[in-house]
Length: 89
Image 1: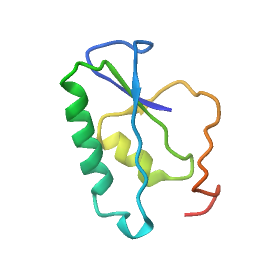
Image 2: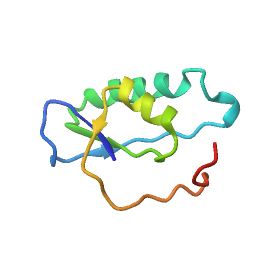
Image 3: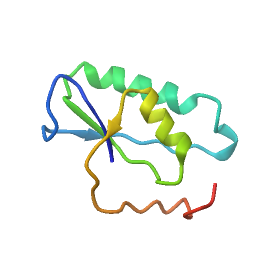
Image 4: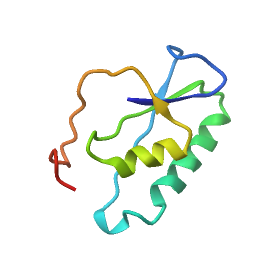
């Protein structure tokens, strides 16, 4: 799990966000652009904590989250990604 805290503390109420793009859209900046817009929207109502989870093998998704200000948080139970097979791009 990765979280971004806005004017609050970990453990405060949170919302989650996510994205999934077709392979031909990868590497074009769409995820960063979309997540940036979601974060701008979330700031308006004063949401203190936003949580995102990405597949452990998908470094590009983790990098998008890092660029948007997310940081690693405490691990939680394994999340299933039905659209991805471990070790496959």
